[in-house]
Length: 350
Image (tube, rainbow, N blue to C red):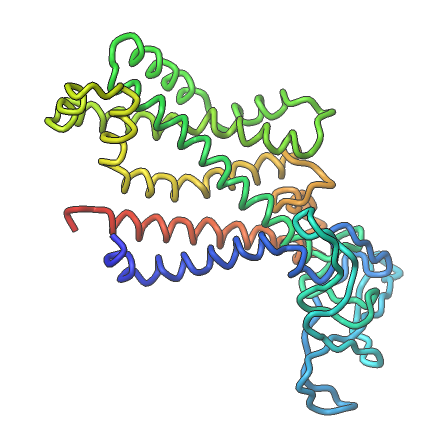
């Protein structure tokens, strides 16, 4: 599988991009130039700043810099606009001291990967929101919630799908009937309304962490059905094979036969299914948070960030608020490319 997968260049590139995304989520505190809740009230809805290497005053500079911004208000529309202030420029440095943060909740530090020497200097490479918070930092922090949501959700989905699908196909009878009718019931209900109903049922007085894990469980309860049905079909075709009969005669329990002999027989299919299911879980969390019934501020996820882009008038004047959507699109595409590569590599007839 690995030899064939390496020949799939798009899938290899997608794997590299996803590794970078998850590393950035893991080290989001260190990579972000600002903290996600830091407010710069003088720069509300400021556009992205350009990085410069040349200025008319000092010529070419090997060290990049950004200009300060001057705010003005249109007297007719009362729209705030920003223009570069070439009289003030701030040079960018690596490993600078900034706002103090707690890395992984274990130890405190104030070292950031890049930034300016002045903590209050404007450095908004992706612009700011209506409260003056740096959008780039919030997107990096949001990746930790959205990307981990997909992984945790698919882990529970995988456990439920393999366990219930395996028992349904191997035991048959009443067990098979109960599992399959439950699958039919869940499949016949439209997915988004079911997500919305179950998410709305979560108590509003729960903490952000409790709501997070509650949504993970909800997505797992709904998402295991497709995998379980395919697992059942695979096990129905394998349970009468000679190696299964030999394990049964040797005294192996039903769970051991399923776990040690049947499930590994189609592990390649399981890997592909997991890879293609992660983006669906990420999109589900994004959709619910965007609609306001999933995660909510002060939690920072890509779906929560997109709540600011619900107003078309706001988007017309501040299009950079859609940057989180670009990250979601790239992530989903990379997972799909990775899944295609794994499917081709796992196909024994190719």
